[in-house]
Image 1 (cartoon, helix red, strand yellow):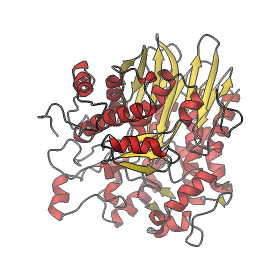
Image 2 (cartoon, rainbow, N blue to C red; image 1 turned 30 degrees about the vertical axis):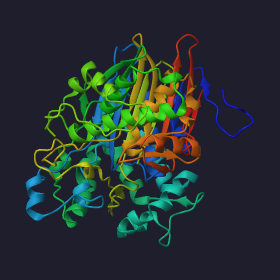
Image 3 (tube, one colour; image 1 turned 90 degrees about the vertical axis):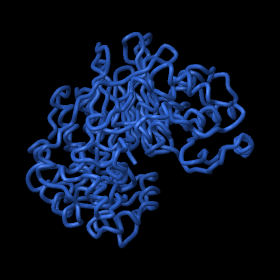
Image 4 (tube, rainbow, N blue to C red; image 1 turned 135 degrees about the vertical axis):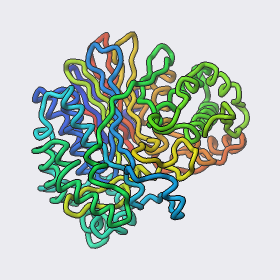
Length: 524
């Protein structure tokens, strides 16, 4: 339990249903749906649609979506890959012949957005409300306006250049060339029109007709290879979730093309350590060493399994975990090693548990802040830049290829025990997300923290040649890490997460929302 004499948040306890998102208006939209009799899927779609309007740096209909949904009584969750594919004409040879690389603001970084198709898929199979009804709050905010929240304003100001480089995006998201301050009312009438079209026509209103024509026209004018057929043939894919066992819990993730596999790999390695008894320096050092191993494999091997072979079974094997564990020196930082040596080479998260016990873990993203920065002018759709994760490297599993999904960072998670749901959970934050899952789960399971304490806990991330430490970490910890050979990199807030813990003994839900964001957890 937290110290009530200090600033902080408490977990939200609820007897019937709970929701946790990273934006207060998104949380409110979900609660209103739940109180009106909607289920977890209905509430999640209403919430993420709102957030696509009021937190435009992080998410929107121009991005992608992944979800894990566990109907009450099901033995395992349904996994949905709602990420988009590259154009049919996109081939690494085409880029090599022209000496082109895929930059963050290039039209070639834009894959066909998958979010709208994913929302419709979930509602058609598991929802109880129409897409039109659930989009109503988002439409109202886009048309009538919404107040910019504090963290959103901070992120907006840091990403001004991304939208300033596109005339249409600047007109929609800047005020006299500047980011809006917290409390400013913003409106997006073009986006409201598009949301109304989707409400009336379903996903066809996005992937066909005027909206698709506007997006494709804008991308092709910038040199993109997209066609209307690429959009018309877009569809989400139900996939088989992957899982590992950790301290008696079953941890579920979506399989590649997402990076959830990396989180499971790290948990398998950590299962051989008594994480809960470690000192802070030993724990952060251990996390850094495990993280480097898993992410090294992620970058070399993870890709769209439809096009490339990803050795999931091997990477989740005890043999891989044991070898990675054996390479860790608790007294010294080491370089990661790829096994086997011959192997081929800004986001929002939310979760809902409803009164019937259905649970959904959902994540939606346009990747970097404001995505590609490219706005389709008539439809008001801001396009993600997920294709920036592709490589132009023939033979690499993640090289760009026709109708291929790039390696994805966004990953929802779901925890079960003894065949029952325990917690939908997730941590946003780009590449950090897999490590974020590990830090959150070990906080809950190994260290005995409550849901809010686990989200509040200081974070670290060993990626890119150093160990990032959040502001406020003691100088003694940084010095101790450097003494073990780590290069310490001071960092701002790492990610943001949500979790809802289900106590089957009492029937009570405990929900938490990350203080690094503007959001909140609510229940009734």
